[in-house]
Image (cartoon, rainbow, N blue to C red; front, side, top):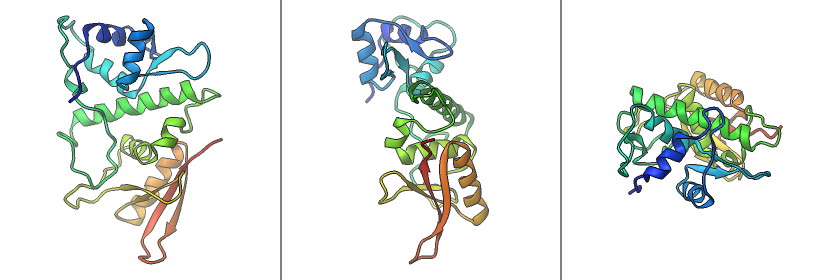
Length: 213
């Protein structure tokens, strides 16, 4: 179970720069947020700390009237956001406005993470985190663009799966048009995507990998 944020941690997150997510605090406070996945330390000097996508969501959840100083968990920070790769049980209210807000916030946080960690401050191609979390990163790009993931009950939608290639994922869709739309979305999100056919099953899929330049 995720531990509730302390009052000090909530204040630190609320005080983050609204544009960049830059944090100010003691080394111990910032390190604690990093351990919780709410912040990251920039690899380049002066090694400032910034909110991660989860940190941005935590701040968004805290927006509104001031809360008591007791350590209470904001409503949407009881768990870590996970992009839907397709085929897993849907989270509560997966198709509602709440999920749409979470996905939108996660995608905006990802674009900010790209800007802060790519050497040229570019937000139009994947960053290092996405290259080490390929399936989740591709699924987030698809879900943020409005594509529907497949349900655990067989409901039609996209499915993102790891491949033997260390830098690529396979994306499946119910029909040719949906598959082409997934490829276009990923290309627009900074991925290289091409359609292929599985030799044994003859099933069409998109092979996608993060663009480097």
